[in-house]
Image (tube, rainbow, N blue to C red; front, side, top):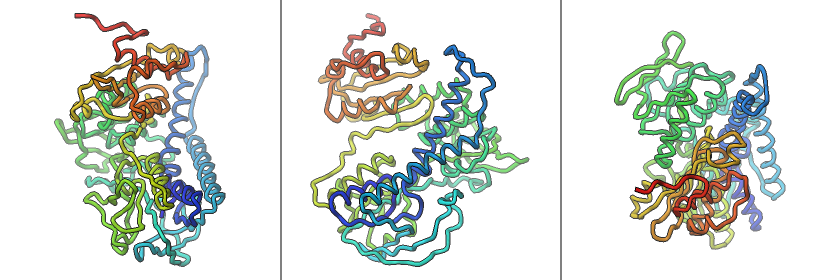
Length: 477
């Protein structure tokens, strides 16, 4: 039930294991990730990055005069990439023998679902995602030996007075903007809000981010959040921390945002983007008819093999509330399919990398410094700046650093935190290091290619061992 990065991957793996598989999806395959999240935002962020690079081209000895952008063309490029990838997923499902049924599935029993089959939904026509539901063509009942719930999540709506006004949008609604707002207020400074703030600021919006915690991306290591706040400030993005939105009103053609916290204030915006959290997409699934319980947050509890409390019913992805990330959903899908096929599989949540595609990028895996200390670890920390890397210098992007949190006695890697160029790619080494229980010595002794951005892992490990080569050693007291 659901064809996102959890559902379609589970379907393919189950088919590869020799099972007869049906997948029910009411929109295009790929789910939020391919249609409304990971891929389209990164496509637009890449356009913003190219625009910024051209504006700074003189720094590289290149002169690009009268650089401008066409937001309609940016959106068109995004749509083309999305279509290519979703068509690719559809082809993979067919190639693996998966039967795809377009429609909305609802439980009528533990392993029986009724599918409300539809004609082409608005998303296929390029219309808004939440347009009027198309006319139901007919229904059919499907009985299965096992069922996987993979219906994902939707943006959470905050109980803010005025949140239903025109111009107040969620991360999904941001894709419906046909022009760049001159003034944008972003409610929430976690990954979603920070990415949209970074994108629209590059395209010229006057952006204000309102975050209730004391720093941006509060789930990241504290030093990362503080550093991103400084970076945003240098780019002209206003960041209000320790602040909440108490109301939104439409006044003189603008949206007036009332802000509470340590100091109350107001600001006017042309659009307000609410990027605060997501909730499980389980409405109208008929979970009660299958005897499936949800927790206090509305998520479906599962064990390490993705089994719900009902025999032969599994849940994967955002509906489980474990970690609302596409790559986690995919791994859960592989695990659930293998378990159903009789294999001894389980999922380990201790090593989950995360990436935020702001400029500069952020990526992390493992424990933050505060979390490691709270867990009772005696730790050492090491940092190395991108500014000391030859590749970063030649690349023209030196902002940021890599930080390693390691155990003091054995020097085992407990966490890796990056802000800087290609952070989302570099974090893979950190994830592998933690997974293999690697130490700072082992990272330092691994020969890294030069000149590369990847050298920063080795350089940071050397620093943590008290043997820095390309930065000055700390002063002795």
